[in-house]
Image (cartoon, rainbow, N blue to C red; front, side, top):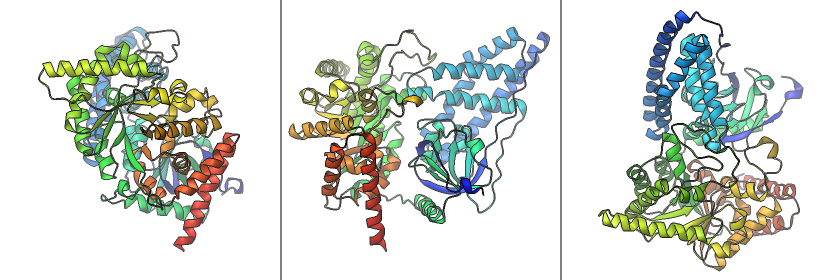
Length: 587
C-alpha cells in the first residue's frame, strides 16, 4: 500500500446509510460499442436482431422482477415493471427502426444513440427525481446492448471476504444481481440519493456512496476500503479501529429485529418524547415504517406514485394507494402532500419534454395544481375518500400566503359535495397544513397559521431559496448551507411561533434525519421529525442519549455563531463529546 494513500478520504453523496469495510471490486462496463455502416439491404436483418434482443431482455427483466418481489416486496419490483414498459414502448421501438432505415448504421450504434437521446431529454428536467429517471433508460439500453454483444458483466468474489462494488454507475438490475451476503457496499462515480439503485440499496440495507469523482482511477482492485454511507465518504486502507467499527455496524444491520420499535424508544434522557414519523415515496413503504415503529407518516410524497408509474393516476388508483397507507399505519395519522411537480415545465408522462421554452421560476407545486384542476380535483377527492379509513392530514407544498390555502379548502368542499352526490363515503373535516419552504412563508408563519392547522418545514427547498443556491448544481454546493445563521434564525422563529399559537409543527427535510443536526433541532424547539423509514431505529437510539437542556445550550451557541462553518464546528464538537461520554459509560 502506498503510504500516501494510507487513510486517504474520498467524498461523495451519502446514498444509503451504514458502514462497511471490504475489498474493492470493479464492476466492469461493456467494451466499446461498435459503430459502422451497413448495407441498406441488411436493415431487415438488424430488425430481427432487435426483436430477439428485446425479447431476451424482457425475459431477463421479468426474472429480476420476480426475484425482487419475493425478496424485497412488490413496490421495489415495480422498478422492473417500468423497465419492461420501456422495452414495450412503441415510440422507443419506432425511433430505433427509423434510424436503422435512415442512417444505415449497425444496430448497436443506433440503440446507443436512441438511448442517449432519451437520457438527454430527462437530464434537462429540473426536478431531481425525474432527472434521475434517465437511469432507467440507461439500464434498459445497456441490457439491450449487452444482449446484442453477448457481454457478461463480472466481478470476482472471494469466499469469506466482503467486497465493495465500485463502478462508474450502478443500475437497479446491478444492485439486486449480487449475492447480498458478500457485498458490503456500493460506491459509484455517478448517480444520486433518489436514483433507483440508491433506493434499492436502502431497501437492502447496504451502505452506498454516489457521486465520488474519479474512483475508477483513485482506487485499485483488491485494496481495502471503508465506506461510510452516513457521511458519504470512502477511506482507503482504514485503521484497525475504523475497520472494527464498520464490522460492528454490519453485524448490527444484519441482526435488526422485526420487533424493533423506534417510536417507543424515541425519548430523551429526561423522558421527553420525540415523535418520529416516516417520509414515504411509495405506498408499500408503509409496512416498513410501521415495523420500525413510526408514529404515522409525516410526509407522503404523492408525486412519486405518479412518477414511478409514468402516468397520472386517476381518482380510484390514488384512493387505493392512500387507503393502503392509512390502514397500514392506523391509528397514527398520515400526512398526504399534494403533487409537488413542475417548476418551468409541464409534464406529459408519455412524452416528458418541455412545453415552455422560457424559464418560469416558481411554476410548480400548489400553483401548478390549482392551474390544472383536472389533475388536482381527483387527488383531493381521493384524499377525502381515504380519510374515511383513518386519520389523514393534507399538506400543501410551496405555500406563500393564506389565499392558496383558502382556495384549496373551497375545492375540498366542492370535492366533498360531489362525493356526497355520488354516494361515496368520505371525510371532509381533516387538518390542512402548509409546507414552509418559501421565503414568503418563512417570514410570515403567524399569517400562514391563521388558515393552516399545522406547518411542516421542508428544509431542502427552504435552504435553496433562502441561500439562493440550486441544491442540484455542483458549483452552488458551497452556498447551499443548512447551517447558515439565516437558516437557524428562521427555524427558531418558526418553532417559537407555532408554540405561541399552540399549532403543530414538524420538520421533514433531509436535516431531520441527519444525526449531526438532531441535537440542534431539539434545542431549537422541534419535537416532531419525519425521516426515511430506514433511519428510524438509529434516530431513536441517538435521541435516547441526548439531554434537552444540553441541546438547548447548543442551539443558543449556534444562534450566536456568525458563519455556517462556526455552526458546523459546534455541531461536530457536540457529537464527539456525546460519543466520548457514552463510550466511557460502556467501559
